Amino acid sequence: MRVIPRASRTELVGVRNGILLVRVTAAPVDGAANEALIKLLVKRLGVTRHEVRIVSGEHARQKGVLIEGLTVEHLRARLRKKM
Image 1 (cartoon, one colour):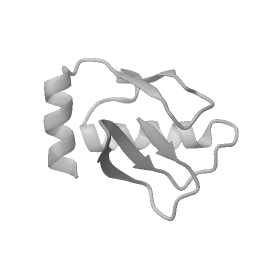
Image 2: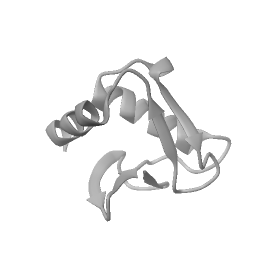
Image 3: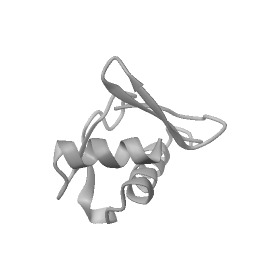
Image 4: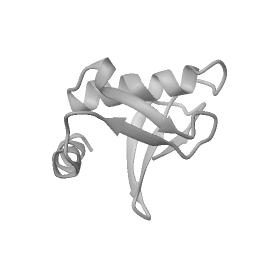
């Protein structure tokens, strides 16, 4: 997942080179962009806050995110519906 902070809108942009692109309005300061990313994923994927966790890239634009309770197929299907 690639996160673009300080965007004009918070949104799922699409997939480029197999990587999900996400824009967030929050700045990458004090974890604000990470929190905005998590809130967006919770809202768009219909999961709870405790099911979403950043597992790598906490201080980078490229992030690894774990969403518990969803298989890759279910995740892709939900993302397709929301984009």
